[in-house]
Length: 491
Image (cartoon, rainbow, N blue to C red; front, side, top):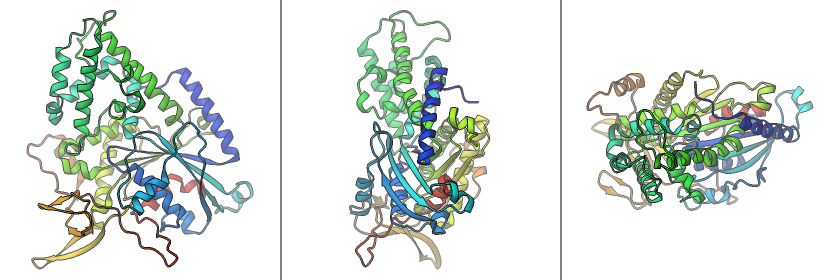
C-alpha cells in the first residue's frame, strides 16, 4: 500500500476545506474535476475541446444528458477560488480554431467553472434538485502529481531510488555529468552554496534531457525542478540526491544536512500545499498519457510510462464516498486514464491502443496491490486533426490518415510547410499487448516495437454554418469521457 502522505494537522485542514466545499455544494451542486497528464499528453487541448463542445452543442452521442435533450443551458461562470489563476479558455480556443495552432502546455495550476442547467431523468429528483451542476475543472501539470509519492519518502530513500534509476538504460548516459558530480561531492564537508547550485543544475539538466522528445521518459520527480515558476533559484529548489553511505547521520552544517533540509523544505513548501489545497479536494480525475509516443521511443520509454502510472495511481484511492468520508476523507471516486492522439491511428487500431493502455494500467494496479474499482481506460482524441481514407498500393487497399503536418515536420525526407495536406500509413499496434509486455519485461535483446508514425498535425479547419458560426471542435470519444467523469451527476 502507498505510504501515508499527510499528518494529523494536514488531515484536519483537509477536513475543514471539505466541510466548506460541501456546505457550498448544498446551494450550488459542484463536482471538482482534476485534469492532468504526463508530458505532452494534451491537457490544455482536452479542457478547451470539452468546454467548446459543451458550449457550442458539439456532437456528443455518448454523453446521455445532452443526447437526450435534458441539458437546457451551458455557461461559463466565475470560479470560486480567487487565488487560483483562471484557465484561459478563450485564448486557447482562439489558437485552436482561428490560428490552427496548438496552445501552450500547462506550466502551473489553473481553474475554470462551467455550469449546466438540466432536467433530471428522475421525476423524484426533479422535486428536490435545482437541476444545476457546476463543474470546476482544475488543470495542473502531471509533474506535480508525480511529486506526491515524495511525501512518504525521506531524503535517503529519495536519493537511493533516484540514483539507482539514473544508472539504468538510456538514463545512465543522460545522467553521466550529474552522477560524476554527486559521487565526487564530499557530503561531510561544510555546506557550500556553489556546490549545491552546481549539483542542483546538473540534476535538473538530467531530468530535462529525460523529458525531451527524443527520449520521452515519464518518471521525473521532483517535478518543480522542470517547472520552477516563481520559486526559481530558491533554496527549496536548489537541491539534488546525494550518494549516501549505507548508514550514519549527517554532521551539523554539512552538505548532506543542507541537501536533506532543502528536500524537506521542497515537500513542505511545494508538495504539501498542492496536495492539501487542490488534490485532496478533487472528486473526479482524468490522467492523460501519450502511449503512442512511448511506443515510438522504444521499450525503455514504455517501461518508464508504466512506472510513472504506478506512481500516479498510488496517489489515488478510488471508491465510493460515504457521507462521513466525503466530509472528512473525500475520495476521488472515479479515475479515467486516457490515451490521447487516437486520431493518429486508423479507427481499426483504436481498440488496440485502448487494450495497450489498459494493460499498462492493469500492471500498475497489480504492482501497488490496489483494486481497479472506479478506474476506467480509453483511447481518445480531444481534437481530431485527421480524417481517414484508403489508398491502393500493389493491388491492395491500405488504410491511411489525412491531415496537414505542422510546419517543419519531415516525413520520408520531405519537409512540410504547414499548408499542404498529406496521407500517411500510421502503422499498426500489436494485437496482443500481453506478449509484448512480457518480452519487454524479460529484457529481450534487440526487441523492436511496432513502427507507429507519430506526426504532428495542425488542428483541423472548422467549417462555418450559414450564420457564420464555426462548428464545434471534432473529437474521438470525448463524449464517452464526459459520461464516465460526470454523466452520473446529471442523472
